[in-house]
Image 1 (tube, each protein chain N blue to C red):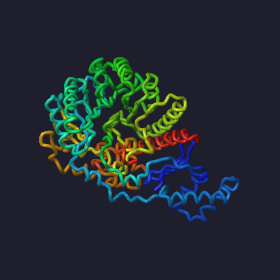
Image 2: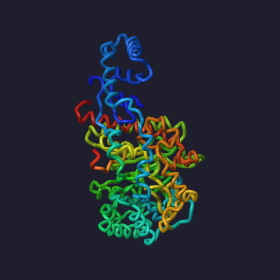
Image 3: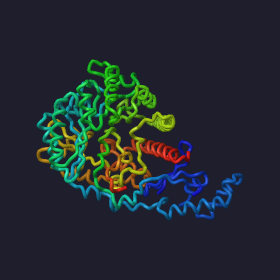
Length: 463
Length: 49
């Protein structure tokens, strides 16, 4: 299977199953897009007739080009058949019972009252609560004890607002560091914060201990303050932006993301990205809102073409700024064509419910942070482990080939079937497809690959 | 090739032979938390490339 598209002045052809990416001229593009449906002689004659006045479509050129396409097919770089279905689920079977990442909900409470919060202001449809040190310590022990030979372990301090339980975060990191030499593990910590409680102590700690910090900022002040307000209704932008700037400046190149959400209120989210850039931030992530079907914040069909145009303009902005020596990163456009994930990872998906779980303040286990509070999905707890094997098996079986609608999609090995929570909330099953998110994902991938193509051709002096 | 430029990419069919160590990051962990993909993850297996 191939996917051919035109973007940014390039004709791009993806060979889905080998992962090959080709930049082709108009003649090749015309041949490749009809290659599988029309016999050689018929196709070349039709193209010659259709482009009679164009010298690049002379029969000699067409013949030579067709031979190039054939050579790539024989080399396994075009029209590669999908032979991966039999190994789907293999990685999960191989690593069954291995947990490598936990999302620790250290605070089911928040000092902001954001209307669009998927976690219902941090409470996840439950009571306000904070995680005790003892629960967190047990969670880390659970992780180490269930990680098998896996060396890299990931822990995300999440909420609500994790800095509302900062002392426990610090104590848990200190405890985890004592486990590393003992069990030959390496913890990578992430903290996701709204910024309200950032001070010098937080900055020093995060920059010393956190592999990554995720800083919630929606971009323009009026957009951010529309949703991200305190309980008195005051916007938080003025308060948090200087704190984020100070933290990032002190970070010394370590990973961080400014992470914004866009909604029906700002489908023109590129303006928010521009605001982030103007504020001096260069590691950026803007996410489509996840919310109930009847929410006024929900992205609409009318928003969709606007979003697609914004993604294209974002790609153009990235290319322009890279050429000007002012590059920035957009999380969803990070794609390493040479060193990206192997086929097992691409088939097996995000790992929710198997190698990745969320832990509530009282130690309950859920498949991921987005399922917390949905009783049916409770997997067990950190004391007795996973007891709801029926639900865990649903997630273990949730590879890309388990989604019937993904089987013929060109993007299946880039998204791996997508987010299980989004699929469940949109269709009632984790093997469904959240159609809107899926279409946005495909647009992002086309843009991401085009940006990567442009960069590689520039490095080779071919642009 | 005069009509087609092939970009350097990781061959997915080859990765079936050496891949699957599982050391890579859990996809949703790093930034998005709501709309994960796989393609933007890094491979942690230094022996696979």
